[in-house]
Amino acid sequence: MKFTALGASAAQPVTVWQSALTTAYTESDTCKGVATIAQTSPVTLGTAVYSVTPIGAGGCAATFTGTANESAVLTITSAPNGGGGGVTANPSSLSFLAIGASYVQNLNVSQSNFTGAYSESDSCTGVVTVSVTSNSGGAAVYKVTPAAVGTCQITITGGSGKTATVGVTVTSTSVGGIQ
Image (cartoon, rainbow, N blue to C red; front, top):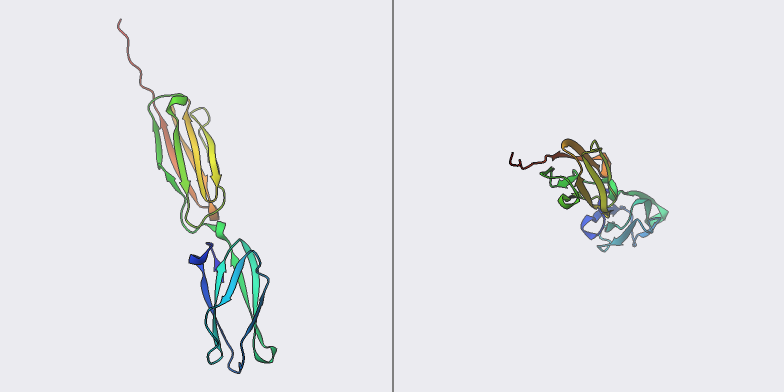
């Protein structure tokens, strides 16, 4: 059983069955900090349903034991930083009409089912400076400051190596004087 998100909304059921079961199952696990396992139905005709809820990253195993000490092992992997969708950058491109700290723009980054921090790379040396304002819990804000006329790209990498590329254009208008 594999999870890419955490919490009750990501919970999955598991059905345990043994034909000769005459009592309840016992469940033991190594899932502290990774998942909670709770029986959600009474045993009926040897079948019981459990709910597995991911609560943290990692791997573990749950063992369900029935009659005559027969058991089944369920392997659980929780990788919430895996990122379920693509990385989204807002805005998807940046345009500057002037140069300097007065013209800073924020770049907001997100990715569904990603709870980690992003990495940033760019080809913007001398054109803009990119600095991180916040970057945790699957959300990031980068501050982009125009430094010179030119074009470049900012690449943000999130979970599962997925990326978003943001094109940047810096132009500068000048007002002509009287001669």
